[in-house]
Length: 352
Image (cartoon, rainbow, N blue to C red; front, top):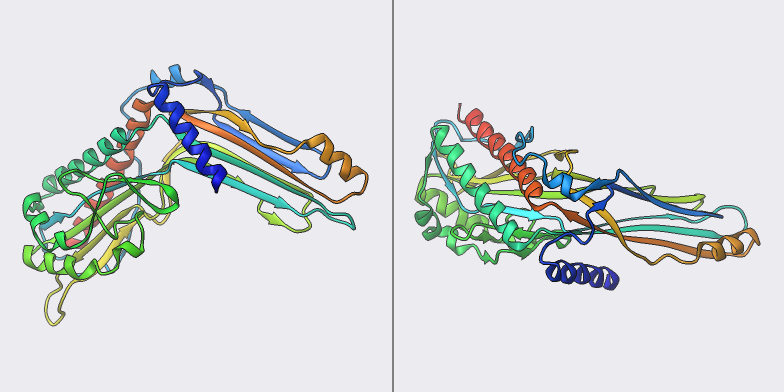
């Protein structure tokens, strides 16, 4: 954990010192590592240039996103909607690790680890994505025939009794969560701390009743890679890990909602429209570059293994993922446009 914090701090300092410019123009799109009983290998593939990526189109078709509803009742003829906030969570680091315990009478344990960190996505860019996503959803709701409650009225309602969070705020697994300045993040928004949202439902229910509206708290998680691991095997002969750059919206992105149900029900009714699986694209937006190698001496470990002496070999490779900011923004727009379109489609379908 300490190594990871130091690594991320170092990447952040390097990015700030470089003024956001790439340290190297060329890099790769994937990395892999294998540690076996008597050898260890690692490598990268898919060489690309950041300059070429930056020249790619900055308009990308919206992602095709499907949502699954939970407790999606009482929407019939409901046409007033209030946007409490809009959370955008950016994954900034990742790690994959695999372990093989060896086999036979001699122990030849191996561990392979890949760590990555995102470089080039500033807090200003994260905030811009949240502002745009919030405005885009409001526009789509209005175009679909919904009456959008004025934000001043929403924020002055019982919504204000739910704790406001700074933008950015630290979310689950260390991601950064951003929200609009005029509609701040609220405790319990997906990808923020789950415990922070305890007690949020009651005030949201009161706000839904007072505003006579459906309260929405959308959230979108964005990741930059797929990680692979062979897992942990006590009697395995090798440990394998990999990282593939891929921009995607995270599973469980979507929106929570609260509305007032008709009699004889009382209070608020809570549910959600969420992504049951992630959705993304293989379009390029970044390059991957090795910045540190903290592996043990492979030749020495192999010699111990061949001599029948028990040993533990640890392979650890650390990579910076440098983005072309305008391309990252283009893909983020495609993600929130796809998600917002899906949210509106589910509301219209439930309205009947």
